[in-house]
Length: 242
Ligand code: NAP
Image (cartoon, rainbow, N blue to C red; front, side, top):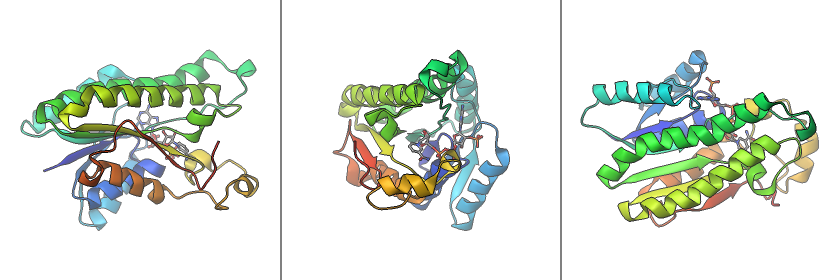
C-alpha cells in the first residue's frame, strides 16, 4: 500500500490532487480543517473511480493536532509510511498592509508557512528511513511576484519557496524530492469572489485554470518520472508571468 497525504484535500485544488493521486494508485489521506461534508465528497469521488482513501482531519497550524492525528494513524498502520506529502492547505486574508491586523498576518503565516513546517517535519522521518519520498508545496504567483493586498500571503508563499529550495538540498541524497507549484488564478472557492471577467483579460490564455490542471502537474512531480527534478518552483498560470 502506498500512501499520500494531501493537506486541504476537501475542496478546490487539494480535492483534484487527491483524485489524481488515487488514480495513480495511492491510498490518499484526505486532510481538512472543518468541512467534513466536502471531505466526504472528495472521498466519494475517489471511491467512484475505484480508488482508496481515508479522512485525516487536523488543523495544519496546530502542531499538537498534527502529531496526535499522525500518531493515531501510525498506530493503526505500523508497517506503513507516507511516501507523498502535498502541502496544499492555505487561506487568504487580503487587505492593504496599512489596514492589516495581527490576526490577518498570523492566520496566513500560521497556515501556509508554519503548516508546511509542522507537517513536513513530522513526515520526513518516515521518508528518510525508507529512502524515498515526494514533497510538493502549493505556493503561488503571489509569492514570486508579490501582489498588492496580499503582503501576508505573498510573504508566506515566498517563505515556503525558500524552504523548498533549502530542504531539497538536505534530503536529495535520500531520494526525496521537494518542489513547489505556483498557480496563477485557478477556479476554486478561494477565487470565486474575484472579478473573473476583468482578471482574465490579463491572462494570455484568456481564462482561469482548473484544479485538475494543477493536479496533473502535482501528479507528475509525485511520479517516478520526476525523480531528477528537485528544488524547483513550477508555475502554472496560463502565461501570466511577472
Ligand atoms: P480553497 O478552495 O479555499 O480550499 C482550501 C482548502 O484548505 C480546504 O480544503 C480547507 O479545508 C483547507 N484548509 C484551510 N485552512 C486549513 C488548516 N488550517 N488546516 C487544514 N486544512 C486547511 O483553496 P484552493 O483555491 O483550492 O487553494 C489550495 C492551495 O492553492 C492554497 O495553498 C492556495 O494558497 C493555493 N493557490 C490557490 C490559487 C487559486 O487561484 N485558487 C492560486 C495560487 C495558489 P476545509 O474545507 O475544512 O475548510
